Image 1 (cartoon, rainbow, N blue to C red):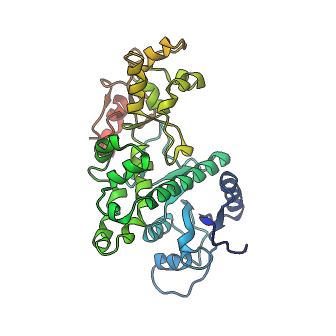
Image 2 (cartoon, one colour; image 1 turned 60 degrees about the vertical axis):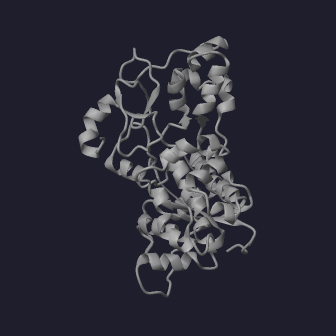
Length: 370
């Protein structure tokens, strides 16, 4: 084992296949700055009685892993080859990560919630605000894991700049709006926290302790705010829009919006906050400002005015209809008439998130789309 460097933060990798472990470790390391170490979890015997969570907690608090330096846990969904440490389940690892206040992402080949794939398991993951990464493409897998680590660390660093006295008076939406530098979006951010949001509910057991020691709760905030941002605000279009949702909102066909010369027209609205290394998003309000400043009504009109050859964005359900919204199941543009919004598991602020009518009619009764 390499000498322990107290200056370096670590990523702990849970992978029970030695060959895959080395491959994934190399992929993640390649995408990370040299100041971060990737440490493989080793299946060890520990002298402790009790459930599997107690065994794993003891291990992760040992000298090898140094709890204070763990920045992210990256965990395979299938750990059945682990025996001694009783860490054969991603559920056990996730439970221990929560106890430690450490962010975690799970992975499996083809395991990310991909457009076009709907299942009870996928919706369950979304409701639980789990971060699940597809490990099929090694290079992309390493980049996404590194992007997640950097995102959580960016939030951690921003939290340190807020003094305890001020922090104790702020709500989670207040803090996230401050971190994103978007105080004007506070009300809309707060809407994303309304209802059943697992990421924010994680705070509740610690509020009583935080009255006497604010550090008890603020040490968990980077994990909680990061999960909320990644699994809710970035996932469901409303305040921010992903590439397909942006194309639909602007009225520009996806293939045309994907051209760099067209995207460049809207560069001032590009999202550069935490997790921006994991994908592309645009601030909706900033898109509106760009269009209004040019005295245009739509992004399509603005692009044409700038001399770009773009075609109108059409609904995936009815090709003749203008889109404007985003189907969470199909990952495609949809129009208001041929889709359904207000789904129970959508956050309150995600007013551009919809389910296409055909998908709603096909699977709605089975997965609670109401």
